[in-house]
Image 1 (cartoon, helix red, strand yellow):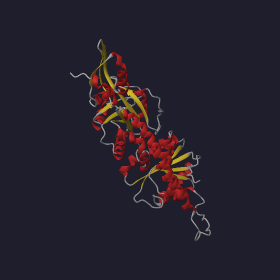
Image 2 (cartoon, one colour):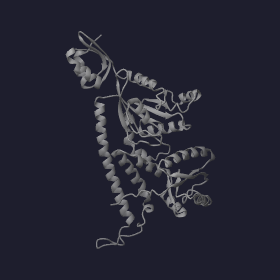
Image 3 (cartoon, rainbow, N blue to C red):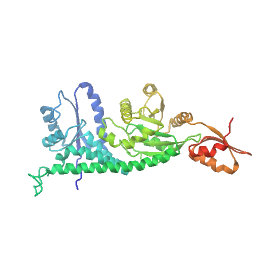
Image 4 (cartoon, rainbow, N blue to C red):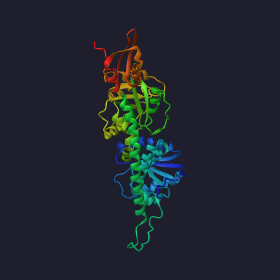
Length: 426
């Protein structure tokens, strides 16, 4: 059966290349190369060189002019690189041409991100999403992947001419795999939606933690809820959404969900593939936009996150900006500037706990106005209703007296009807 072959894991020395059209783009290109550098190092590959080149006109054959191509080829030999990585997206033809000239592996940022995603995916859904993205990425690159594509399958009695080219057969099998994978994703997505429907039947207020990759989303989830989800100081440490309950000081319960991180120049194919993972942001009552204040590029990272949220249709959801890692950087002047960017903002360190109580208070403030607080007098014999309200709703206050339990809270769904006869009107 046809399978997409991954790159051999023999590559150890990478050379990074970015192309810009104007000098004003050079600073951003270097910043993007820093990010690409970290992504590649996370795959265990050493960086032996990097270059930002200004080009006046894009060459359809190499992207660069022939003089620049020769210059790069000399540098590749000098540093003994075995893979060259373009930060720019390159066409399958350009990829083949570079590999023919350099005799080494040539890939782009898109393929590196796919590799990182493939390495980090844990759940069945995430693995299927990575598989789909890789299949779609590989479809126009089949000539590069195989050596047998020039062969023709001989014509039989029912065939005319030379028969069908092998590449056409492989493309057909690849499209079949894409179709099957999409169907599998739909099935797994339905199962996840069933789990979400169960949560919503309670229904508990939901909060999606979104932000640039490595902003500290999982660390914040662990700090707030006492969970032990995987957290690491590297890009895309986790790709799978994790939901945990958080009981606020007043007794109100909310559901926090950690989502996959965003990154600049994230291929649209991956945005589409991981849309299911990011759907938690679409249905959330509140979005916590977590920002790494210690990163000098935090404003550009915020812009990237906001653009992806807009693509997902979640830009109108209520949002609070949470500046994280204040223990690593961000003096008073920087905080004042950051407040202007994210007006409704809180400053915290998810690692040390600094500012986290203020964030919890902010969550209380937001959700306090979203539910009507009602008063009930429950008979002593019906303490089960008090327990249900504590578990399935929001129990704000509880007092015991001779007449029963006087409680303040916000029941939900069927519990509203069960408590109706005990409501106190005053």
